[in-house]
Image (cartoon, rainbow, N blue to C red; front, side, top):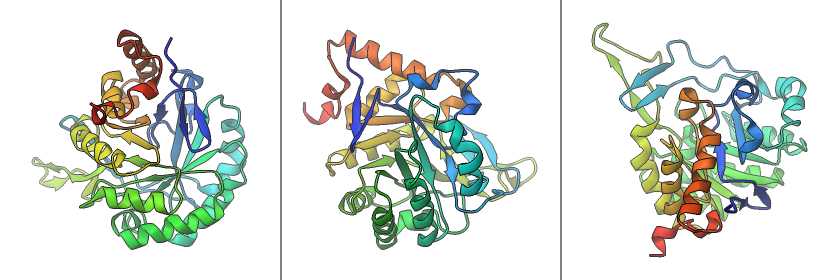
Length: 304
């Protein structure tokens, strides 16, 4: 057997496969289909200080080799989360990470402070790159000064593992990764969805109520893979790769490009057991290639 354990900051994960935010709900939605303890971790859906209804319908559309979403961070807020959702999450035998969102720096700071006090949440994913909200969100992920300000502010109040989720909708994603590292993040995750749109030629109207939305799925994998490779060569902190990962081979490509861990997202809508299948596929690959640990292939293409 190969050793699949990886570390992100002080946190050790049993394997490098994490379910992406927005694709696994709060974990309970997948319990009838898969054993979450087989995974390295799950990142629960985007959470905000106050409840949000999200964007009007329609807010999802299938595209060639992918999907567009404009859900808009629908959630019941941190008070409801602490009282009704957190107790169940605390029972999981896997790392539970919360995806943190806000309209203002103060929102991010207060939400991170609240989560810092929850013992069973060992990490947060600071989402400064959501393209589907009208305020906040991606503005922090596309402006270097704003990104630095929000990461720095959160770092002052959050004392556990901080992961910053980066937007691909920028000229130079490496700049934002370096800012994250400089401001004390333990890791960066990339990429969030690409901004896209779809039009229904029959109705002559956009398919999404918001006109534009976030593109995910296999269509974005080559872009995501390139960005992970670029960032992994530029920073010393771990890189978590995501974007179009549908199977173990996809995940291995991201690891070879330099990702310490990967996130499986859109594929869970097709196969709720995909995460566990990816774990098994990575281990099988390592055994066949005679590598004793996954760390031996991390960034391997850069060492050849």
